Amino acid sequence: MRSKITLFCFIYLLGQTLQAQIYDFTTPLRIVGGVNSSAEETNAVLSKDGQTIYFVRTLESKNIGGIYDQDIWSSEWIKEEWSTPKNLIALNNKLNNAVVAAHEDSSGENLFLLSSYETERDNTKGIAQSKINKEGISAPIKISMPDLDIDGKYVSYFLSDDEKILIISYEGSDSEGEEDLYVSILNGTEWSSPEHMGSAINSDGFEISPFLCPSNDTLFFSSNGFKGEGDADIFYSIRKNRWNNWSKPINLGKTINSPKFDAYFSKQGSKVLWASNRDGKDCDIYTSWTIAPPKLEIETQVVHVSTFQGYDGSAEIIIKNGVAPFKYNWSNGATVQYLTNLRKGSYTFTVLDAVGQKTTAQIDIKEPELTETKTIHFPAVQFEFNRWSFINDSNVNSFDSLKFVAKLLQDYPNIQIELISHTDSRGDAEMNQALSENRARACYRYLIEELGIDPRRIIPVGKGETEPAVWWDKAKQARFTLNEDFINQYKSEELIYEQLHQINRRTEGRILRLDFDANTFPEAPKEYLQYVTIPK
Image (cartoon, rainbow, N blue to C red; front, side, top):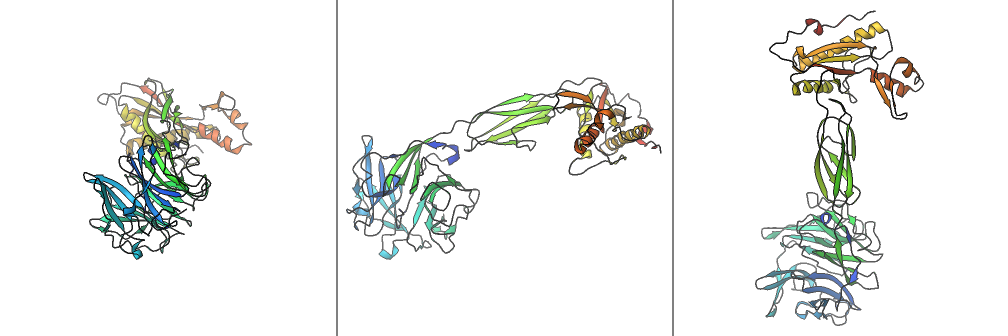
């Protein structure tokens, strides 16, 4: 169904990418009127006003070169259907002929045509221009493209609306398979040599009938080298940055593509045209209309933090409408729909659906007001076994956690806190008490000496193993105090056994007062900077 030499172009009026507009298509219909016949019709190009359609008819005895020739025909939109077409004899010869594009200016309609209309040898290269107006059709005049020299049985082209981008389908020396897609750019008055457009959109089969939207980032083409519905399917791809860097081709789906040959896709507004032989041996021109996707709509559900400086807030994005699947991107780096363990703060997120619709919003997690005697749960501060040296590795960064404490004190300049370290219940109680005091003082020293916190605002306290943590058991939906007897029941389950002990080895804070005054508070005890002796 490939014409031996076909040149294809169409004016894309909306100037937006496919993802922003097309979700599905209406049921395909043969275009109404006299365009389709017992011959083969392909390469439909509409005039700017949509009132004239130019197309190629093959296997037609009335063609200038006979039944196997390829001629340009045209039809007018009259009384809600296309009129009986006529052969544009002035533009047809014994070579293969086609319209590249139809542009308008004040003097009439400019048709850009396949071939240079010079000699038979030149029929596979070059473009010519002719004008149609009240005076008739002018003789085609060659447009100079000195580097466009293409041999081969099958060729198709796309010429952009600004006439500066030429996309070519032909079998070159570096093709992946049969015809591949190449691009040539007009620089001033000279066209660049054709450049291969990359392996993402070129396969070991053929890629033909390219069509590019005016924003130059969405390319439609037909191929038999990618997984599809049949002989040749219509795909689209998005240009990433360079002309040889494209996204993976996406099939337009079963509404447009059939088990047979489908190609020469074009779009004007919501109307699309393409050629297909789905209902017979030879191609006819079909039409359909795009269906806009359901607008992406979301809601959010927020649970605020239950305690001051807590981290039990959560946020969920609820999808009300849109096209699945959805992608989520949060300002904290998360890529999930539901966030837990959130602290107070503002979180921005973006949702992107399958057809490119995007929405960005922000949620605010709140916390209760600051009060005295409030316990503050710090992020994990961990120490080496039986030591007060901080752990900083790929799993935990104690220094970052202490920076969190410093920021809390900076954000609330009038509070004074107890900084409390605990141990688990294993080992000697007296040694655990001393170990916890040294760990609290290690935190104290880092906050003062490295982060510049006023020492009078922190009182380091060690609690040893005397105050085990309270743990929420999700499976049993109950809270349990993590004393030694409780933890020992999990001794045979090493992972949870160690996790429960780790929960006890925590560092937390307690707000002592809300009226710290740097001008009146006495100096901090020097002993807080000294470590206590560990009993043997």
